[in-house]
Image 1 (cartoon, rainbow, N blue to C red):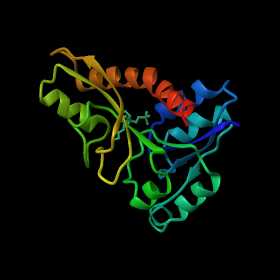
Image 2 (cartoon, helix red, strand yellow):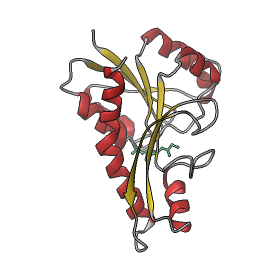
Image 3 (tube, rainbow, N blue to C red):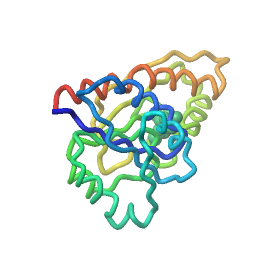
Length: 189
Ligand code: GAR
């Protein structure tokens, strides 16, 4: 039986697109749906070629449990947060223990927590003159960016790297590693 994934994203969607591309020819893995809290999110355009239209929700349906109820009905094997910026509630974690994962664009525990997302992370990395940065894929827990790590990978930085350069280096790592990590998790379910 094929494994089922649900993706959540809030913005651009380069990771979602890459994950869709990676699993396109794989009959063992089915991307059921992409959920977004943002009706203007770039991700909605990116998923069209894969025959996915996206499920848009608002704060009310997220907070009152309607979104979770919908997702429960679909019985996913894995829920993947790929640039999803709202905090996942404890009701989700109870419903899907060790089945919700997130990608963070830094080497946690550094540069995590509330407000640390996207370019804010890379700006902080630059301001601290870090010699390296990277990605962390982790299980989602009640505290932002504090769940058990599944995978980390690093990239070296130079003093001349701009915030955009750092972002591009991290994005390249995400593109290379995230689908493979998802695949290996699915193989062990
Ligand atoms: C990615 O770099 C992801 O790691 C980051 O948002 C970006 C989304 O890009 N996530 C966080 O910062 C979560 N705290 P994308 O929409 O192009 O995939």
